[in-house]
Amino acid sequence: MISFSIIEAPSVLGLFPKGVETLPEALLDAGLAERLGAERFGRIEPPPYDPRRDAATKLLNPQGIADYSPALADAIARPRGDGKFPVVLGGDCSILLGCMLAMRRDRRAGLLFLDGHADFYQPEAEPNGEAASMELALATGRGPEIVTDLEGLRPLVRDEDV
Image (cartoon, rainbow, N blue to C red; front, top):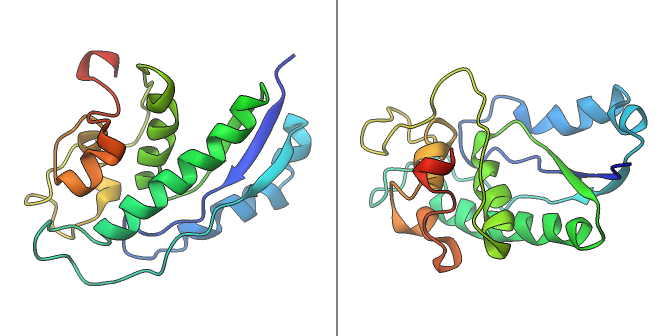
């Protein structure tokens, strides 16, 4: 039987704050952990939010995302090391980078990606600089190096593995 470990990722670094940071808490309050029979592993708090679009990368919070992704990957690695299946809860799609980094550290990883849209914008084309609209492009190595070459593991997932 699969043993689940829930990790809360209440980030808004990849978008303008819209309340998505409350999604992990809302799902847990609705009984998700109990329904899965999962342990609550912990909550990985993001660095402070900066509402200004970075001039060099055209992204919101590129350094924050670059710092948060390895911290989230570290948290994901711990339950995986204990043979548990990590379930990461968050509403900001840019947390995909930390999730994929955790997998990529060990081996080549695949990704089944379901979303309302492709999330494949490039920074210069995304009107607001929201990494949450381009995380699949970033995970496949397209975009500013600060968020596409995390720990020198660019790409986090290959095109043919998506």
